[in-house]
Amino acid sequence: MSKTLAKEFGLLRADKAGPVYTLRGDLSAEGWEELAPGTYANRKYFDLAGLAMEEKTLFFEGAVIQDTWNPVNTPATAGNLASVLDVMSNKPLSNSDCIAAVNGLGNTVSPVGAKLTFDQTIYMRLRVFVVDLDTQAGGYFITLSDNQLGSLSPTASDRVYCTRVVLFGNNADGVYSVYPVRYLLRANAKEEAEFEYLMRLKRSYELQQEPDVD
Image (tube, rainbow, N blue to C red; front, side):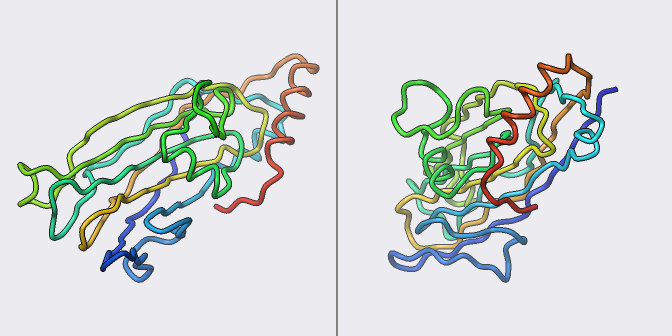
C-alpha cells in the first residue's frame, strides 16, 4: 500500500547590517543553524522504523516540495540574491555537504567536490532568487533558476533525511525572510528477495554513520 509522508520546515529570518548576517532565533522556526556567514540549514527526517522492523524495502513513487511564497527582502535592493536548497536523501548531510550542495555542487558527475551521489539523492531542488527593479518596491525575490535532481532510489533504511539550506549573497543591508515549506514523499513498502534486502540494508547502515536530528 502506498503512503504519503510529510515533513515541514518553518520560517527563516535573518538580518544584515554591514558585512554581518544575524540569524533571528526569536523569529525563526526551531532547528535553524548558521553554517557560515549568510548560510543556514535545518535538518529533519522521515522516521521509517516501523517499515524497517517488517524488513521491507521502501520504493518511492514521487517527491515534491510545497511552498506559498518566494523569499522576501525589506527594504529590497535590486540585485540581492538568495539560494534555497531542498534535499531528501538516504544519508545525513554534514555542514560541508550542505555548503557544497547549495553552491551548485549537486549529484552530477562533473562538479568537483560534489558530496551526494545520484543514488543517495532521492530528491533535490535548488532555486536561485533575485530582487529585480520590477519587484523591488514589493520586496519580493523572483525566481532566477529552478533545477531538480534525484533518483527516487529505494531504501531499506529506517530514515529518509530532509535538509533545507539557504544561502544569502553579498547583499545590501536589510531583513531577509524565507517562508515555510512542506516536503512530500510518496512511498510503497514491499518485500524483496532476502539477499537484495540485506545488501540494501548494509548500504543504508554505511550511509548513516553521522549524527542526525529530527
